[in-house]
Image (cartoon, rainbow over all chains, first blue to last red):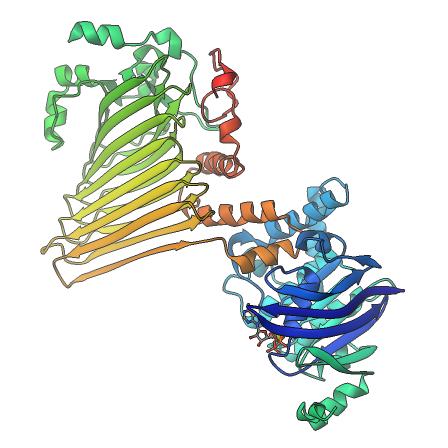
Length: 249
Length: 387
Ligand SMILES: Nc1ncnc2c1ncn2[C@@H]1O[C@H](COP(=O)(O)OP(=O)(O)OP(=O)(O)O)[C@@H](O)[C@H]1O
Ligand SMILES: [Mg+2]
């Protein structure tokens, strides 16, 4: 059954069209990789799935769990299980990671009609998930992403993903800027989440990540459209031939 | 004159029980009711442990030499007010809480003149609150002169929670002698029109002043802060951090003036004013200004005016946090770096709570004084229709 289905999505900003008819279908349990040259719309697509309102969606629709979600606000999509790991995680001075996660979890529970998570349970969850990404206590006590190194920010994204346990995770270049150990940690975090019910989209420039997180499908987003889809071998082919090769397609 | 004063002075009973509690924190209260020192409702002198608290009238009679020694000039025009004196070497354990309470059946003009003197090596926490109990028109004009003798230490918290029909003008000046330390925390929470004039005069060396301010305004409230820091002597330190959040068509002005005299070498002076505008109609006018007459100084100033960060909003909401809560988190975080400067844990919690309530817009729906403090010992009949 499909978890996410995007049909003929067109989006623009300031009158400039960035997505020019994206079609994509992701079934439950699948991992999809999206690759493509810089500035061709990968992050735009990811943030529109998450509900970002700064883009004008001029045409097309997004279905999640077979429901049209175009009118769902950002937070409702999150509560429905969509998670976006940001390419550029945002610094929030003055808000601790614990407070941030507690608020997020409890607001998601409220959306589902559940009571807030008991404090003890929350702390246990924090401890458990910190271990998954090998996050130090020192880091966890700081303000969200403030002064974090590039790699620490990415780890924090995976930590949040583990805390929120999403159904659809979209990881936008979570691998860039990670050292080889961190990459392994991040990949195992993602793999731990894999289940027949959950799906993942990884956006990446490097075939290397796909050795750790083995995708079922690879898509190439080029000039606002998915111009080619295939299996993991496509990633090797791209690495070899470069993106210019796509022009002919 | 005496006759008029007698006629204006409210009955002590009317202000009985007004406490404005800070949970978990014991304070000694000094109540001024409609501008008149209410001895009966204030802390018992026996409990003051050598600290002097009395009306200004009495101070002139009995303690004029103390006032003279402190370099504070008396203005004779306004006679109502309180006098506080902390003797040398005295570390006052229980914070003093000055409560300027307005409860008027008809429009009222209030003039007060306070004097606070800290002797050498003494230490005090002073919490100065402005509260109005009902929503009638009032104008209060307050002058508070504070003298910090050598090596003394003062934390001064000002909390302004008055009704939307009340105006206050505060003129507060601090004189700092050698090695004295001052920390102010100016919280303008609610009021029709608030004007704060704060002046710091360094009259000794190696003294320091940390001046923090926070104004949270909405509807058509106006908050003006004018902060003047005069570095008249060498080797002193001052740091101003004023932050504001403005909603609806509220207005704020910040005028910061740092003066560094020619002989005031090795001065460190910093000044920062940051604002968030929540609407297009809210306006801020900020003028940080440095006036420096020597080269051997370290000075900086800055001002920002902005909206809540869209990227941060998207980030928070993408984790499932509602738009309203995300705004609240960001606003609270914005206030937080001022808040953390408060050193008393109980007070910090109280302030955090007040700020949260204020950001939730709860003040206009409260049911006893303008700030809903849930004080069960408050003994007034409140007309809810006016609140
Ligand atoms: N807020 C914005 N205002 C103007 N242009 C924008 C905005 N956001 C994105 N764009 C433009 O949209 C295009 C696609 O950007 P996007 O971030 O989606 O690319 P990307 O494929 O993720 O690139 P990269 O691999 O470098 O991350 C770019 O040309 C970018 O400049
Ligand atoms: Mg991108």
